Every structure is written in structure tokens, then in C-alpha cells.
Amino acid sequence: MITQKDFLKELNSKPLLFDGAMGTEIYKRGVFINKCYDELNLTNPNLIKQIHIDYKKAGADVIETNTFGANRYKLKNHLLQDKVYEINFQAASIALEVADNEIYVAGAIGPLGVQMEPLGPLAKEEAVEAFEEQAKALLEGGVNLFVLETFIYPEELNQAIIAVRKICDLPIIAMMTIDEAGNSLTGASPEVFVKQLESYGADVIGVNCTVGPHRMLNWLEKSRGFTNLPLAVMPNAGKPRNIDGRNIYLTSPEYLGEYAKHFIQTGANIIGGCCGTSPEHIKAMRNSLNAIRPNYRKINITSIEKIILPDVKVIEQENKSRLASRVKNGYFIKLVELLAPHGVSATSEIDKARNLYYQGIDAINIPDGPRASARMSALSLALQIQREVGIEAVLHYVCRDRNVIGIQSDLLGAYALGIKNILAITGDPPKLGNYPDATGVFDVDSIGLVNILNRLNHGLDIAGNPIGKPSAFFVGVGANPGAINLDEEIKRLEWKVDAGAEFIITQPIFDIKILENFIKRIEHIRRPLIAGLWPLTSIRNAEFMNNEVPGCNVPENIMNRLRKVEDSKEKSLQEGISIARETLHEMLGEIQGIQISAPFGRIQSVFDVLDGFVFK
Image 1: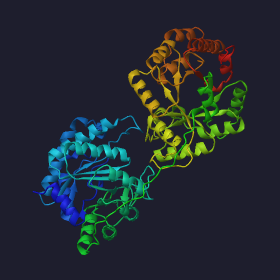
Image 2 (image 1 turned 30 degrees about the vertical axis):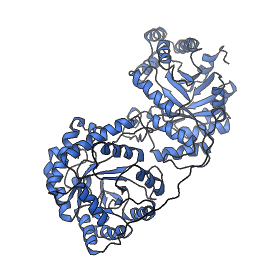
Image 3 (image 1 turned 180 degrees about the horizontal axis):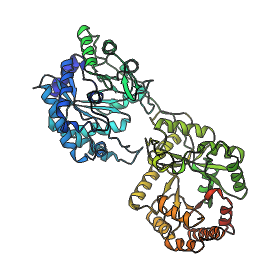
Image 4 (image 1 turned 45 degrees about the vertical axis):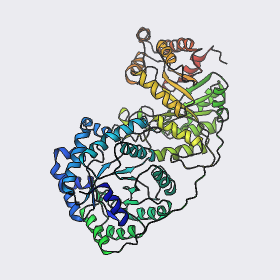
């Protein structure tokens, strides 16, 4: 019977060949992507078995279990979270039967599919628990080693390694995915993330997926000199091309076979294939291995020059922006929310901002795609207002529309152009807006966004690389005092503050009791609280806010007041102003600022609400 010691001993004497893709093979054999491929271990084991057989016949030394997405979080999308053990154990059993003690079986584990702290709400301990649950089932199913593959974030990969090490000492292959330049998808250079992976304690480190053999060879050439650990490379069969609605990989088996020689001669210890590779590709790679006497040598790296991060001086809050300074010095803050226009001209909004500036408003709050609607970019409007009026903007930035690379690029560009105040928002799902067929990205939520902003403020990008001069964003977050699950809302607010949030803006307040309860619950969160205020315009407006805007609670006594004047537009507007003024009066002393919305762009309602109030 082969053991983990056999694997490591054999790996030390010759390069080993892994199998190719599982997902694209399943698709090629008639199973469409709306199915849970991991569940096929239970519902169609013969299909999975045949794929393993084909890879074994092609000459693979190692086959991977069909369990890349078989963790509780990804299986939950298919309502299969209660079958983690069953799916993984059966997958190992199928592969072991095919291997028949002649080749090795690797338990395949991929990312969880949810963001882990600091970029998301999943705690590290929860990640370890989920990885351990999957690994334990694979271990009991009889796998010989583990392959942790296609990870984007090194820290998540580290939690997977910790989980496996908790339950066994089987060999671990730890692999991330890279971009066309050979960097991690978060922008870390090979030198940085290779040393990171080395420090986590895996037996083999490497890269897989995303790019084809040429780019992966470039990565190998750069990385071989950075570590003594064995290296693994498992490229895609090139970049997929969409032909008649199907993604087709066009890299031929012969081409990948030729690159197998280059991989080994450059110092790879493990080679294999990822998306788009087939038994034919693996057979070609086997033929190449059999035909060459590899230039196989043990690399001995004696020392690597340590990367020294620059001594960054973080900018103090009072020096970040005029708004940050006023908040720090205890002034009562007055913000007004203006929406970006639907068209290409912001003349009206700029005129309104100028009028608000002359009346003593501290900053203009600009939502980013509110209610998932398409408007001029909030960044564009913010820049125009700051440039042409002189008043600062608070730019809402939502996570819905960009991946983490795009987010970082946007933020660096915004700062370079003079945007200093950011409100970090997760964002409404696209299906709430005017384009229900649009898709959201949501690489991170608002917690992760605050972490990204905080890193930039400390002179680091999301991969931990120095960016030179640090940014000085004044970072705010949203809060919903009327949340249905207030415990969860406060928990998330605590995470935002721990991540670096410096002020809080609430959803519009209509019920003072809800705000008072919220303030009592967050006494331990010592951050300035700016309350949202919305001057209602009619009973229909109140009903909309109460039923269609998450977190807004318009009490019945206010609804009744508006019903009494619903026949008069003018009286409805006046009653809405009166309600807003009463609410503001009751909140004074409990908050450090107010954000007033201007419904339908009516800034006169802002002046009417503030008329007669004296603030510090």
C-alpha cells in the first residue's frame, strides 16, 4: 500500500504528473454548469470514476478527488451543506478505487467562496472549522495527500493548511492562482507571495489555473530561486474563447506537452493541468516526461534578501481633510446628500452644491449608484463639485460593481484627484434597481473595503506591497439603527470600526426611540455618529420609505400626520419639514452631526429644516 512517505520520497527523486481538469471534463461529458459538480460523487459516481480512469490511463501519477467546491459554504448554494461529509468521503472512495494502490490520490480543497477577515465577515476560526470539516471527510475516505488549489488570498490558504495540519501529517500542496504578469490576483509579486506560502508550512507550493503554460513558465523562472521547497505548476489550456456561448480552450495537447519539458528543465517538481486540460493533454505531458532526462536538481537557496517595508508615517485624522478636522475638533457636522444626474451634465447639482456651501453646509454626500440605478459616476460628480465649488465631498463607494483590483485602482485614483472623504458601503444588489439582469461583483463587503482603505492609509496595497506615500482617507461607514437583526448589525459595525472606520452615518431616522436604543447599544463604539434625516414629502413618500428602503421605519403617528394633509401637496411638504425639525431637535445632544437628504433635489427643504437651529 502506498503512503504519504512514498509520495514525498518519490517526489524527491523525480517529477510527478498530476491529472487535468475535472470541471471542464464533466461539462464536456454532458453535465451543464447549473448542476453541483461535487454532488455528482453521489448522484453519478460512474461519470466521476470514468474521468479518473481516463486520467490514470493517460499516465497521471496522482489523481485529485472531485471536491474542489465541496465545503459547507459553496454547497449551501445548492442546499447541500448537510452533505459535506458524505460528498467528500464518497469522492475519496471513488478515486481510491481507481488508483488501486498504483497511483496517488490527492484530496482537492478549494477556497470557501466567502470573504474572510479582514476583507469579509468570515472569522479565521470559522474558516479553519469549514476546511477541517472537509479535510476530515477526505482523510477518512483514504486520500494520500492534500492539494489546496486556486486560492486568491494567501491568508485563506494559510487557514486551510492549519486545518489540515490539525488532523493529520499528510503531505500538503498549497497553490495560488496568478495573473498574466505572474503576480497574485491581489497584486503581490512572486518573491512576496512565494515567501508567504513557504512560511505557512506546506510541503509543496505552486500555482494553478487562470493562465496558460507560457505565463506559468515565466512565473516558474522568476520563483525557482526564491525557495527550497518543491514547486508545482498546473496551467490552464490557455485562455478560453467564447464560441457560440461556450467557453472553448484552444491550447493543444502537443503544445502543453512541449511545455512539460520546459517546466521540468526549469525546476518544477510537480506538473499537471487545470481548466480546459483533458486526458489527451495529460498523455502528451506524460510522453514528454518519458522522452527526456530531466535537468532535475535540488535547489539550495541559502538566503533571500528580506523585503524591508518603508517607515510610513500615518497621517493623523485632523490633517486628512477639512471635514476630518471638524469632526476631530467636536464641531456639529452638517452634510447634505445630492444624487448624481442621469445624464452627462451636472450643472444643476453643482449650482445646488454652491448654494449649500454658502449656507454653511460642511460637505456634500454623494451616493454611488443608489438603489442600484445607473447615473453619472459619483466620483465624477464629487470631483466636479470640489473643483468648481470648493466644498468637500463625501464619496459613497460601493463594493457591488468592482473586484478588489478595480476597487484599489479607483481609490488610488480618487485620492490622487483630491477625494479624501469616503463612505464605505456594500451596495444594493443589482436586482433592486432598474437593470435586473445586471450582475454584482461583491468581491468584498463594506468591512473588507474599510480594510483596503486602512491599508492604503498605512502605505500598503491589498497584497501588502508598499505603495510609497500613504493615502489619508477619512473613512466612514453606514449603520442601520432599525435593522431587523440589530445584534448582527452591531456586530458588523464593530468589525468596521476594528477595520479602521472613523465615523458613522445612519439610515434616515424617523423614530427617535429606535435611535436612542441604538445609541445605548453602541456606547462602547467610540466613533462620531452622524444621523440621517429625510424630510418626507407626502404620505406616498412615507409609505415608500417604510416599505421599500431597507432599515427605514416610519412610525404610525407620523404616517397619520401625513394622511391628514395628503390632499394638499403644499401642506404635505410643510408637515414633512415640521416632522424633520422635531426629529432633529430630539436628536441634538445625542449625535455629532446630521446628514440631510434633499428629496427630489429640493435643497430648499434642507434650509427649511435647519432654519433657526444654532450649532457649534
